Image 1 (cartoon, rainbow, N blue to C red):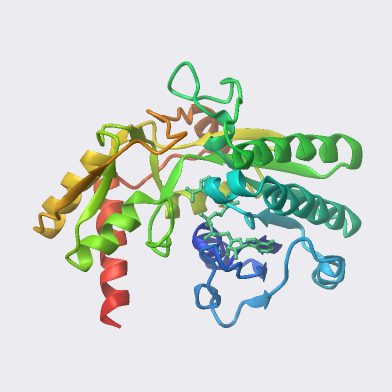
Image 2: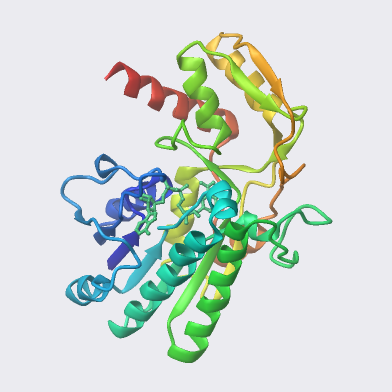
Length: 310
Ligand SMILES: NC(=O)c1ccc[n+]([C@@H]2O[C@H](COP(=O)([O-])OP(=O)(O)OC[C@H]3O[C@@H](n4cnc5c(N)ncnc54)[C@H](O)[C@@H]3O)[C@@H](O)[C@H]2O)c1
């Protein structure tokens, strides 16, 4: 199958590229290597076609027309909640106007389907857990708003132009290649500190929980969505709540290093809990996360260890 992966040089996108390559698909990665994102040219294997282009670029149509994808896996985005709060206009330009450019061009070249990186951020702080597809979306950040709006455009394009879609609303994805210097991604941030034998900062009381899902499991979900889950949105997580303190304790146990802890106040807008029930993804996509948090943390730790040693 001919597939375009936008954001394919980024953390999640590059694992999707690997999973698609393993199945023999023909790929084109489009990524602007945005300075505040996790995209690196080195994340894309040298033999994979790579187009360094912004998804808002008027020339995107030329690239789509030359490659003629059957499916577009759309993972390019402005993915920072903080940037979205500071500059909602920029967030909307990339996550809404950029998405529309991708959708219009997918229609023009008669692509069959778009797989969309949705987000748990589109739910805001729900009244009840676990979060399912039936949970009302009440986003509390411009980023969450644009991820929700994106799904409405997908529905419109399916109904009006016949472009199929599947939206995957991820929980907290972690794993190799996640930026350890980013604002989010506590697993890689902590691993970065543990490897340098530095202290870590834990906000609030550290008992806030998230649903951490391993990036290679997320990539497999994108494989399943190539031909399943037509016109549907899925919440993608493990169903397991893990606190920041638990992640800290796992790393102490795995590394044998008792990193000093600095306590800090709750960050504005931080949610107390997150937990996703992915039963629908299991039923419709046949998707089940395979990696335990402990195994995923160990694989991620080893990856960063090798990176430092290289
Ligand atoms: N990491 C998570 O836990 C998580 C959770 C929910 C949803 N998502 C979504 O998954 C997708 C991938 O996120 P990630 O964590 O891998 O982040 P990432 O920053 O590593 O990947 C995003 C990629 O998009 C590229 N990009 C940004 N703006 C672009 C533009 N205007 N044109 C072309 N390329 C552009 C970046 O260079 C980067 O390579 C995003 O859509 C994000 O919103 C991520």
